[in-house]
Length: 141
Image 1 (cartoon, rainbow, N blue to C red):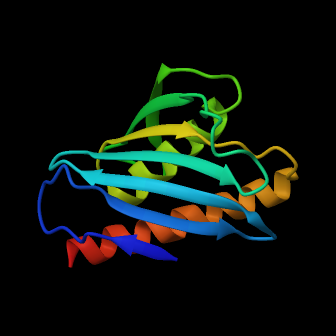
Image 2 (cartoon, rainbow, N blue to C red):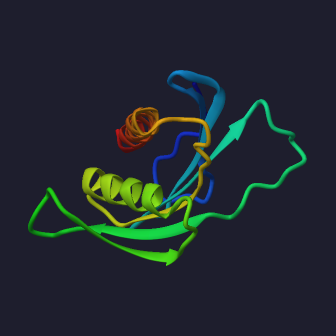
Image 3 (cartoon, helix red, strand yellow):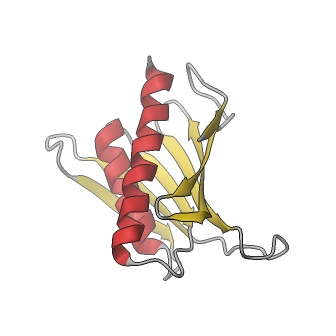
């Protein structure tokens, strides 16, 4: 796992993360996390080592989520831009991160899980949330 740039306050310099997804070493997860004071902006994508580097991935979905003020176990979200292939993943990631970070989150997602099972996709989600939260907690301390 590689990371770059730790932050102590609001910053437009993203924390960058990149690592292979479990059970699919050819499929890499990439995230940029920018902590903007009152909210966090996260952009997610995947790259496949088998595909050409000249192809441009689609923009994907963009979702806003905020934690429920009285119930820690829920979050509210709204899609700002939808793309059929990534909206569910973006919404799920935004709600999880808003609950755990306890602040509003914007998530842009152009991830492509072609060739993976639903279980492998969920394992990737778990690893991604774990790594994003690890970086978030390091930034806060």
